[in-house]
Each structure stands twice: as C-alpha cells, then as structure tokens.
Image (cartoon, rainbow, N blue to C red):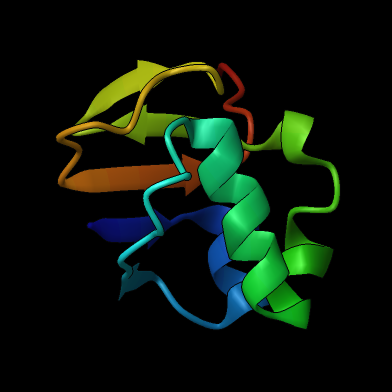
Length: 83
C-alpha cells in the first residue's frame, strides 16, 4: 500500500510518500501507525502522539479503528483547521 504524508508529518519524515507491505497482524489504522513508528526513529518522533494524527483510506477520512483490508492508499495528516 502507499502511505501519503502531509504537512508537518511530511516535513519531519522528509518524505511525502512511501510504499509499504505491512505484516498480516497490522489490521487497523492504529496498528499501522504503531508499526510505522517501530520502523524508524524519525517516524517514532513524528507520531509520538498518535491521537493527533488523522487518517484517510482511499480518500475517505476514517478513525484509528478503521480496518486496512483492501486499502490502496492511506493518507496521514495533522488535524485540519477551518478558515
């Protein structure tokens, strides 16, 4: 699956996207965030408050309990503000 990073996540990770193949036990957005954090120190630091990270699966905003089954693109981004 493709992971897209936006705003300060992109800046802190120094990348806007990556292709990943999570292990089978990674079944929710929450699992994915924890797995991404475990892979490298920059991701761990960038997402040390996972509750601040918002997610979308295939262009649909979801919560952290959303299943990843069949997901092609997961976008991770900070909270959005109005204006």
